[in-house]
Length: 169
Image 1 (tube, rainbow, N blue to C red):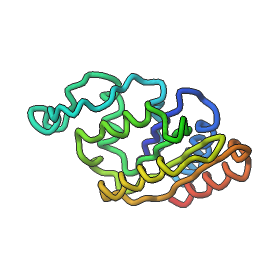
Image 2 (cartoon, helix red, strand yellow):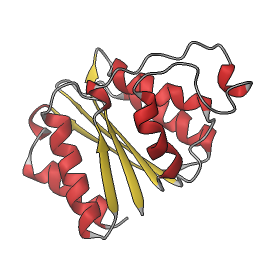
Image 3 (cartoon, rainbow, N blue to C red):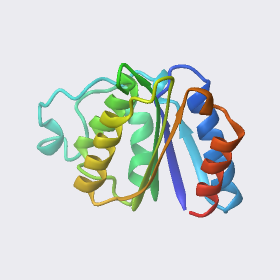
């Protein structure tokens, strides 16, 4: 299975540890995993211009780093969104990458999706609700949601849980 992981963190700490555990487990199971650091990319928000659904034929009118990750959206069998929680929501960077998939409607091949979230306080409700709405809208299977709060971040137990999940994919 080809798995695209979209890392919405502008830093390389707790979320990166969760991604590394996932990657190790998935690769042990024989899956191909590619991580895209959207937290460090320049991806603008959707303009709602509808160019993509008209003249653009599924391509966004904006020319930014979305072009670097769109092939992964189109070719992957599984999507993993990973983000820290900033002020009760995923980062603006992952939000932009997530919302701009609107131009294609639904990732072409993806059958599964997972969500990895880290935070200091555990305010996950909005991010999880958004993820569930995304999977319901696209018809992609919600394969799992994993959160790490406070001392769970980078803990052996939490990373082992994520790795075990990925090994069973």
